[in-house]
Image (cartoon, rainbow, N blue to C red; front, top):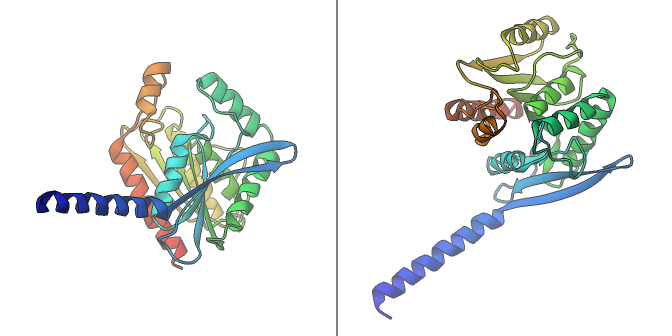
Length: 267
């Protein structure tokens, strides 16, 4: 073996070891849990490169159900130093491949708000009890259906430091009331989102203002529903839905979210 070949081999081995170490730092776990007679399947992610207890973030999936997209978001948060738990709002095995099925699952989940809240709180408890989590520092973020869920959890007074809604419905029969909402609220919506029309945006601002809620709302001009999900364009083409991925809006909302968490958890 020549010296050059030996050096190249050593470099390849070193890079492989670095890759293994990086992979080893990221920890993920699929957690099955029961609520009443139903089984749910969530996904916990954290990074061992960060020492000590850290804030925990709950993630609520789109109307499709607990899928790969929401698990990827959990891992992105873990890389930033949080422990993230992508919960399951529908029940184990309920993952839609067609909008009609997704709508059915969503309607079943939202037909009983107390049941929905029970599922959210059960997942929150699992996150708070994780060895890496400071149970006094918890936030939640959601996408589409999940965005509406986290907003309603804030409206109902769930003890959260903050919530972030991405392209979620902003209208709700549940209304924020003065001194009831504990969380700071951040909302990202698309200016061309047919599912979240301007009157919903205006209504949310008025509602939160009257309730004295700390609200940050960002609307992206000409951006469609589901703008954070790179798979949205394919789904739009397949089913003729008015949705679409927008790289700029996705990047800006992600960075805004990280800044938001840094602010609320550094207090």
